[in-house]
Image 1 (cartoon, helix red, strand yellow):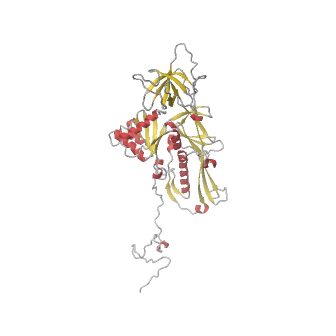
Image 2: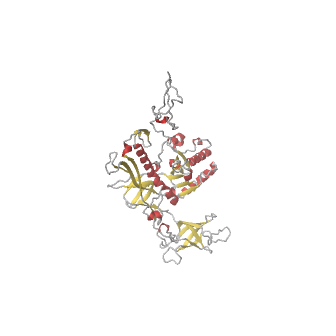
Image 3: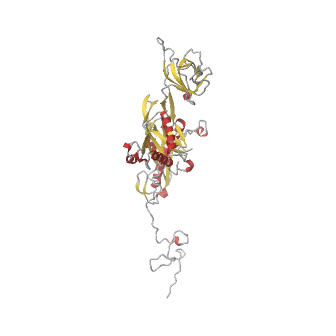
Length: 492
């Protein structure tokens, strides 16, 4: 007797098989929406462990490597930096007769220029365009009280010719120029003279400041979702491993916020005075990139493509020559994106006659390539400078500056060590890392990294909100001191 099975409209047309076979009549399809997806008599195989397809996603760590964090109690941090020790002026003009030099003086604030060259001092007068120079004696200076000369005017006489115009055999002409450079190298006085004409040079300093910004973030989960548990096995970037429930999202919010702590002070910009944001009460903060662009050195197109190892080396040597004119700090760190880092590797390998540099390009770490790599850096020495090179993940990550649309910065050179600055509050010189973070803190409230829970779920009973809210807050800014020793590598 034959029995005809009538398919259940709720289960779909499913016919059992006498053997364990995957047939069209007994196969449950969960994807095509044909009806078989409702009859889940067999649960799908589910992987509990989360796949880490992006590896370590956090971007912070740069400032922990090169700087420090210190508390502050004010709305503003102010520091002073030394000016140069010796007396020099650019853009000096000479008259037709070749007897006078005019220094452009004036300005306000940090741009104020004063003539402090005294009669009796000896100076070098040079033309940067031609390389021609003369050693001169200062006969009179407009900076001397009671002088008939204008404030920025010097009367000079060269040692090797009668005036700056010259005209004799072998003499040079530095008259009628407006782009001369002069600097004082000493003085000369006749026997039995006084030093009443000498000008007392008061040391000056340049003052900088920055203001902290308040950074916030929040994670929220409602009470109903907290009661629907779904466990996920994770191994997060902050070292947490095991099974997490809804706190998986809270953990990622915290990690994202910790990245913002660094990204905000690296990318920060000051609000334009009188602009829309400033009028609305937002101050902004001067970040690392903004400070170096304003007060440091910027190299454009170092990794433009098509360069040879020799041309890259020549371009790098120009950077070193500029560092010589600044603080000449011996040890420096290079934080680069992938393309620029490879350009440095190619340059070092090319000049070392080996595919990997043959070890001779390292210079540091007892000239050991293995030791350099163990430390995570490639070290090399050029001239009197030591460089430690490493990749900066922030410049490579696709969700930040690793994206093509925003790949405008190739890397940055950061001096190692500390700088000496004058602390306005302590009233003394102190040593600080060139890069350091200041955060608001007092005995009543520490705003370095605050976290608290509100709501009426998850153990919190602070409001009638049927949810748990996890709040994060900090208030901080970055101090970039001696920015003249930093070098920013711009793509274009």
